[in-house]
Image (cartoon, rainbow, N blue to C red; front, top):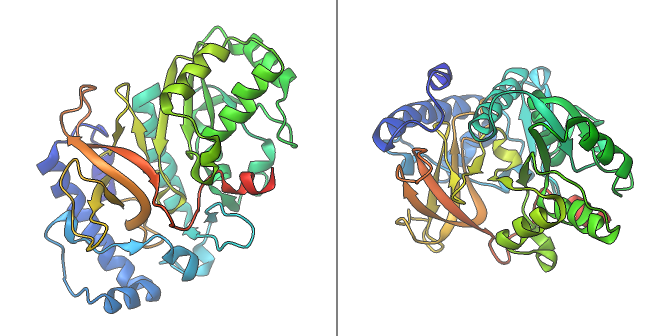
Length: 358
């Protein structure tokens, strides 16, 4: 069961051992969700999935990510719902609803901290959040942004929000944070577009020079429909160092539908799958598994979704597996590259709500 995973370092298992452990857990989740979630059982019947157990990770049945917008996908009774996660979406768009029990929410948070701890350390650190405090005010009904911020709360010795409610830079809060914590190691967290627009760009506009060189910048969310504003990863990092002195970056790939299982970026620019998750790249036409180095749809596998059937999801994102067990950083498992949302796929990103309103 899941407790076995917690006894193992998150990036320590090579292919055969990891697949054996993960396959057993995912088969159990498929069986459990089929019994507890009528919508999932009907879906498996509709696609003709009749196996008692998948023999490989590639045989685990996947659901399309937009099913969470269209059906009530939950495997717990209403009285056990502790939190509802909402994917971000522009006005008029349907949003995914992810139903979490208290135990599942705790599990997701525990794993998120384990994974990030492998990149920035496990010690609680001061954290500068490039967002507004308004994002965490409704703690039962979260968007991805709010849930991600709250998920990082246990990493923070002190959490300071860098933006006012109107999304302008709170210069006083920023300067107070630097004065208090600037000489020690700290974390900066924000969604990519917001870091670019409301930290880097606004500091330049104000002609302010600040020293955030001891900070580790955790980013998420990408650019999504804000591609007109997008810059390369190299330019983003170059601007951060020029404006703020930032030298340490940890981007990651993840989604509301599989909160807790992130694919974090190592110092070589590779996004890594941990022992809790895996990636399969699927062919655009027939959804067959792609070889390493081939682009296709990203399927994400995770052993964390216990209160809803989100353990195997076909996303609308495009990616490519670069290798497995041989990254120069020393972490085992698959590592990948993300190319973004497929053209003409429905836009649903962490930054979309912000973009629609500001």
